[in-house]
Image (cartoon, rainbow, N blue to C red; front, side, top):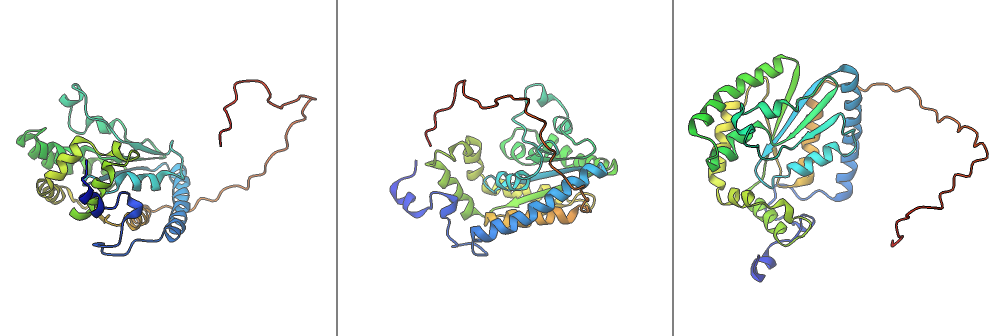
Length: 281
């Protein structure tokens, strides 16, 4: 737990963050919500186009812990159909999955025609946490860096668009976000022992990041790096860039007319019996 001195120095929630240390001032909420709504309208157009065209799209989100991946994915998906924009956030592998190819359990979640799948972390765990924490051997790590670009070229060559985002948060902002989670019961679930370990191994993760980006930044599926110290701007920039990478067009919808209800047949539809929830609010 934080002592009083530390608590006085650090804001307790993301909404209380100041502009100190940020490259740009924090975007005001009204401006953020206005811009986000416009982008979400375009995401709905994208959804219609993907359905009609039968496109298959994979979006990978990677980045440092507390870089804002979850919030960005939520902003990206909250106004579209979860059946078309599917989020894959896989748990730690089972004993059986540990014996599979490094990408095997992820491919099971790949999209069919007319779907977008968003990976909240991905096969790049092999080049990140597994590498830094020693969960894989050096030979397995080197083999991953060698094979991953080949496999991704195969995926793209088969007609699936692969878009990869890396969210980069600075040291000071990551520390602020971790501290904000410690005493907040609504955020404590976000802080795992692995997160704390990643905090202490900042420079090891920096080396792993740079080696991974250098080895897997290919023309067919380049890395798109998002500076995420200011979360609202990062979300908007990320969504806008995603939209720019997909050649979608607005699909015209037929006018919808609400039909008339059928005659009631003298049936009283008022609900009066049953276990009603107490109206406490």
